[in-house]
Image (cartoon, rainbow, N blue to C red; front, side, top):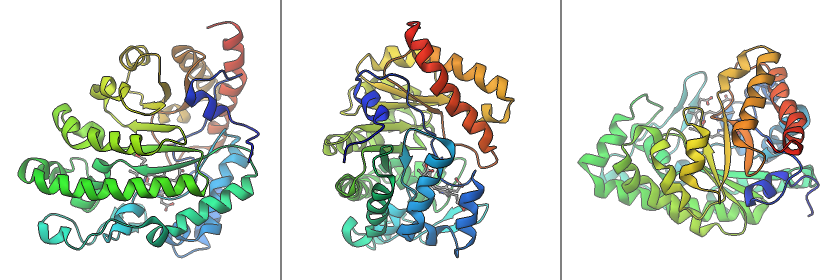
Length: 349
Ligand SMILES: Cc1c2[nH]c(c1CCC(=O)O)Cc1[nH]c(c(CCC(=O)O)c1C)Cc1[nH]c(c(CCC(=O)O)c1C)Cc1[nH]c(c(C)c1CCC(=O)O)C2
């Protein structure tokens, strides 16, 4: 189906756009009372993720309410380890827990390369329902975690400040780490291909824990697998968002992907120099800006638009929106991009 608003896809491919497209990482859920109402009618987070009709409903809420230029399918990066045989629980206000971690050859034997049509059909169904309901209003973003970030959760068993078990494995048993990364990558490629077949218009890879690795480990244990995924997904644009990986920007310039995510620790002009002119950049507002006044949000958003320039930019935060953010402040961010980017474009800023 022809998209009515394809700004995101054109910006990703480096084509001309009338204005800069805008959406927010983690826009689906958390900040919206409408999301919480759906969530509270169910037994928990997992029921919402695994029930395609509800997942589709909360995917579309931010498009209706926040007026963003894209929807991102409501799911989680942790559905991949679950499909591989490593189940997670989502503990209210604490985050995910994996009762059985992967730390030995024996633990590995319990895992499989998942078939997305068998083990992740609920996400594929949610994508199909969402696409039908969106009726071409905006593109739908599919996603997965990058293999390193998924390994980090499977080995650690929960969120962590240090991920010391996961990082430790890279020193103590690199062979096992590569074996696990191999299985995660194979599952992820099949899963993302299935998301595209189901209707996803763009794919984003979240490497949320990129920034805790040394550059050498990142090149050994993260980049090659991301590169494989990029090479495998060729019908739709791909975005690689690696939080904190300022040291890898030159490596990213060589990836077979269209867009690179930028967080607020990174200097936009330096990143642009490092990745060159042939990639689109996405980001990079500090989510904490949205705690400030409407006036400050406007000023800082305009500053950000000027920094990136009018071409090859997708406006976003530098990481997911925080749960205690006022949706009105998000609307202010979105509207400022929509209002000012065409003006800056016409002024040639
Ligand atoms: C690391 C990571 C996870 N999940 C995700 C990442 C990568 C992005 C990032 O770095 O933030 C990705 C994710 N998780 C969720 C989405 C949905 C789509 C969207 O709004 O972007 C996406 C894209 C829903 C969710 N995933 C989660 C929630 C909150 C749970 C709830 O509603 O009760 C939502 C809406 C839970 C989750 N899921 C995860 C954690 C650590 C937590 C607990 C803390 C938190 O709330 O963020 C793992």
